[in-house]
Length: 245
Image (cartoon, rainbow, N blue to C red; front, side):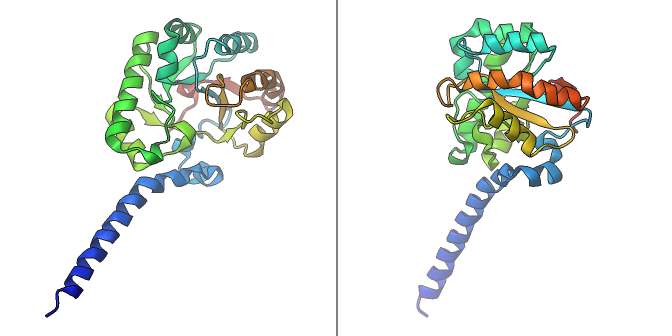
């Protein structure tokens, strides 16, 4: 009997196994479809108590911008969750501590701003544990939450978050405030475009991975967003008060 059929079968099995591994790595990334994830995986999406809005910021702390956000939040009487990058916190440890001192919740955005779809679980685990340890050390608060850069969740993300003792959470709506063409009006419109009760809002307190100066638009949009949220009778606060299940 020729060995060809057996070899072909083995090759087919290897291809199927490789395809299965790739699918397992990438499948969780389908959570980027916000409307679907809000309905089917509300805990991951950040859907909490209907009368509460979780306000979150990514990519800081940044000495060029984060202090202005802290002052604006004080004026509005809001507390938020700051998803910090380890490499940013390492550059300005006093500012990282100041975020927590001002009453805000600290969380992990990774040590590097790297896409997890291209990283294995070993790398992702090292990155998350390093970021969690640094943020806790600088702020005196143990982070509970993790949001992957770009919202790109893979199998590596889920494994790493579990090993790091962190819970992954994305967002129900965002301001798309990282764009060069973003305006106050567009940020407000984008936040309201996929609005759901008990939503989690994603904004950025740094432009380290965004268009230069884009944080100024985000900052200017906060009072306008406050008008909408106050009219809706919402309380604004961190994820710790959001009632996620």
